Length: 176
Image (tube, rainbow, N blue to C red; front, side, top):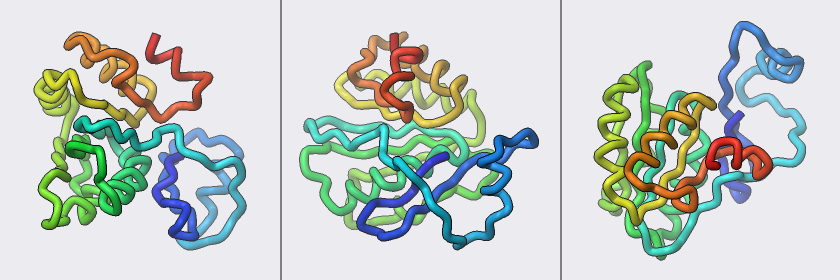
């Protein structure tokens, strides 16, 4: 589940994938209508926006891009100490979630790129990975994380430059 809102929005927007086999939680979630109210506990982000005068690349697949919406909103409100923000997103549906966020003509350092499949995605990751000074944020399935991290490591990108949307206790499973 990805939280797609900032605390100051006074609401919590989420996206999640609903597979055929669902947990009890997702069964109940699937029964809700858009705009329904329910209680969520212990919400927080695993991907804080780093401000260290470097470019940031947001790499995502599917509904995972929702985790990046709060970062993009923070960047639009204050881009201080971030050289640029670029989103690379696999979208085979053609819906391009949150595309309006990237249509901000006032900030040319905020860019987005949509690709329709993984081969095109990895071709672009290879191009971005030559920027060894950048931070790479990755959101997606476990396989997507592992494959993307492996690709970045081939270019010498260290774990300190990679941020994933996983709780601290699971990060070493992906980054060690």
